[in-house]
Image 1: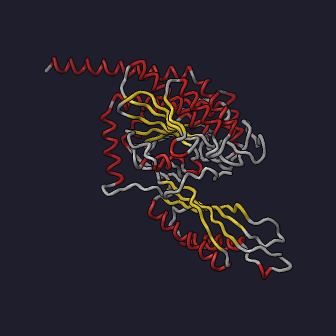
Image 2: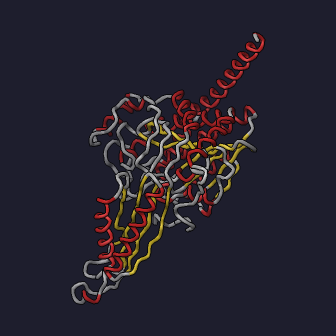
Image 3: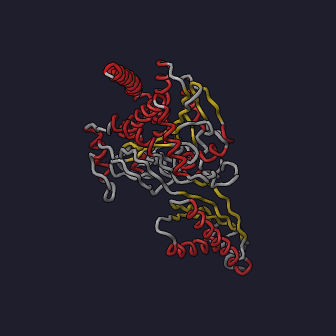
Length: 474
């Protein structure tokens, strides 16, 4: 018995030693390349290309990964800017997601005051430039570790366009591109460090297009039928409906076309709707009610209606098994520590916010582990229902900064964002190495997934069989 215990203890010491070496290899690489990947993220930040139009961004990403020894499969899922970069062979296959699209109309310089680079131009207000560059850094670090150690398996970087309302990943799932993947890791920029197993809201969107009959608005109004009246009628009914929705539901809309001139009865008008709820079934019920309001508006205004579903996302499906691994590695990496200059920048940003929810200094902390339901939506949700998936957030924005704001763009274009990005890359890479070294964890993650989605679950894309809407931002 004493001999057996000695052997077991020796094996544990040996494994711990080699695990420490593996982690040191990953961390040293990322520390040494931090400036390189900060430059990559800043380049993508300056281009700020919107969904399905990320031509320069995807070319930069693919070129870098090809130079690092990855094989590239470009233009996947009938999306010109989507790609998969692979290194290694065999199992397990660990995928790391990389986003790349910006948001329209949020141009902003890397300054703590509202200074658009160019009015009405896009900006990286959700930090996908950091997401993309940081994930690539993690994938390259894992590749280097595999090359040095001879570890078996495959690391893949999925270049995923159009997360913002385009559901790029859903088309990739629908095309079977995750069918042989064993685990998926991802991250997202934020104002905090958090690896909790979070869910999100299911959501679906469509553009509702009404067609009426043009006429002189003063000389012959009785001859016209206003498409704008149909849009406003639909909006009125939806706003009345809000009183009768379940509490977690969210509905948003913008009028994207309201006519051409006030003295012409509008022949064409369009309104763009989002519907959200934590549960797919409830979201779809609400969606059906929204469709009825559009149909009623068309009948009441004697116009015709066509609508085009633009995207559909499932809620994130939490996976505690993987989330525990990611939390352990994020805790090991730690939070973000500001220089004096960065502290001043963060204070200036916070002065522009109305009652920021987080205190300055919280960027150094790791949030406690608890299952949460976020109020946003993401196409990572579609991935998480077919492969065990876990993610994290790191503090790339000054505490209290909301996503989709000019303040987020500003922080993401300077060193506060870059520091959080490298921390995310480290946590992702360490998590992936842990999974390669502990395949039993992957098996447990699959058990977790199967239990949560239930024995009768059958995946279907919420956006149906439509082609990717490559022009939805044009």
